[in-house]
Length: 334
Image 1 (cartoon, rainbow, N blue to C red):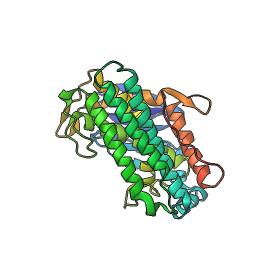
Image 2: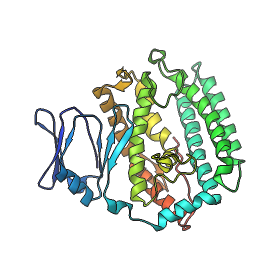
Image 3: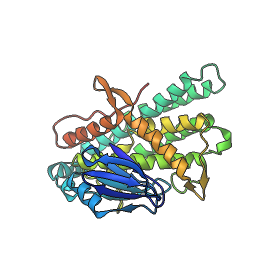
Image 4: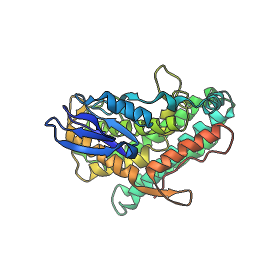
């Protein structure tokens, strides 16, 4: 179970073997046994966290993530014991120098492009007979062309072809975001994708959603014994969780874009002031993401919660790097 804590003056404390969250008036708003907890997301400033809670979370492998009001993860607390896996990390890092780095990068981007394609087709299915249907069909065709282009890219090491892969992904993204622009209400002022410091409501909402997803991916990467900074598609940069960003590519559309764009199209009006989302807006986004993570999709012959799918994919990546199996990315479809 994941809990999200928001609101200035909120406190998080331990009572017996339970985590207790109280609002600024000392009223209990959440109470959860530690054995039921997977992780904690702290979503605003002015929240107090007791050392007893930190100790219990560390003992039980519960991660605590901190996000800004824009949804950017800026810190996390984890037990050192969760970072003790050596064999998997060594195998992951060595993959950078051989063909596995190329293969995994293409698989991540291919999964993202196919998810974009499937989401565009999903939107088109619900808009048959409308003027926008033709634009959606043309967009799907263009994304399919980029998928074919990606499959033809080859090289011995990721450094040789990273820019070629990113160029292909970027051209597909520009088609995809033009579709989103056509779908969301004009009053929201969405013109193009803006990753940081966005002032318009659509980008602010998406950025916050991606921040929550990033925390989820960071958690499962660590639990699978992987190194979050040893990426392939995203180049090394001090403090940058490049592999988390790589792995996120599989899940942006099914976990963030689909529920949040649906919310915006159903009349949800985000409140943004100086680039920061209001508390109510953040809670609405968080709830939509959590509901999607708890929703089920087809996976390995049965229906599984998306949160479980993310966890299993992380473990499949670990076995892939250790040479124990091939890796098959998760591709969302409707």
